[in-house]
Image 1 (spheres, rainbow, N blue to C red):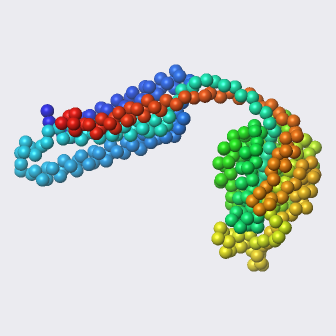
Image 2: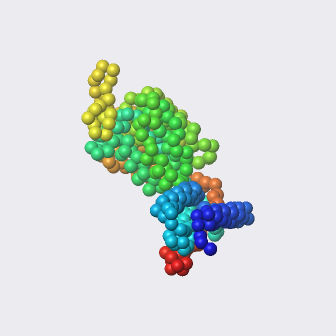
Image 3: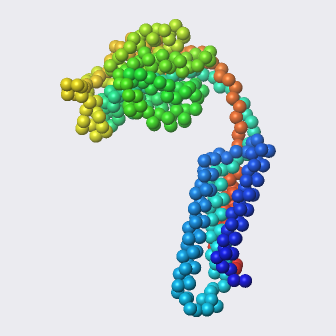
Length: 366
């Protein structure tokens, strides 16, 4: 029997149907009857659909090949130009590569089976970080290569490295404030979210520290844990009575710490990274910014905490954490989590076998 394009189409439709039916039945069985089953990288499964585009390209390439051969052999009998099983070899070789790629994507999604359920008790202190994102935090007086905001984010990351079980949340503020990262002990998540913080997040400019502290207080939740607030700011353009808010927080047992993210020298605020253009007031004069050290010290004192000042790119968060550690740690709720074992090896193995066979099709089928 001479294999033609109709046989190729039937073969591909049959194998594709078999792939999806078998995959659907197996996946349904596992999800309904094996609670410990999951895909570690489930989003990668979308790659299976994108790979199907190759079927269209293969069909188009085969169609063009048929047309080209018909044109070249016009007037000749088929027996003089048809190569036995040429379409068969081409189709089976493509199918081997195609399904090898499909299994590689399934392996990339990494199916896993639960191995053991563990319980974990953690204890610590709830810490809310208030980060100033006003335009003045774009000044580069701390470091010529980094803005005040970049130095502050670096300090927060270093602070996270020193924590062990404490829960942390982040409030961003300028002329207003809002809770940006809910309180959590997933430090990697916090580090990832810090990357997206920038001065354009809030349209209202200014430095409303009192508003930031109030937002932090509301973000703690109702847990009866010991709490602390750490404010990273240059203190410029103060717009509310932060000392009064800090005293109110102190009465509720919450300590307030402030970190001065600037120098005492007045500097302009760049509009862009190259620093060639600066923010100006309504009269066209360049706006200058410097550290309001007294105010930050007063806020920390009102909140029964400490004030530290950034020294170039270094921030002494250790002294703040040492003082926070004096608070009694609170035992958090018991957490249960499952440990998983990877099962991608089986899918990867099938893909490798198909890839190996694709190179032997011509030898096997002749």
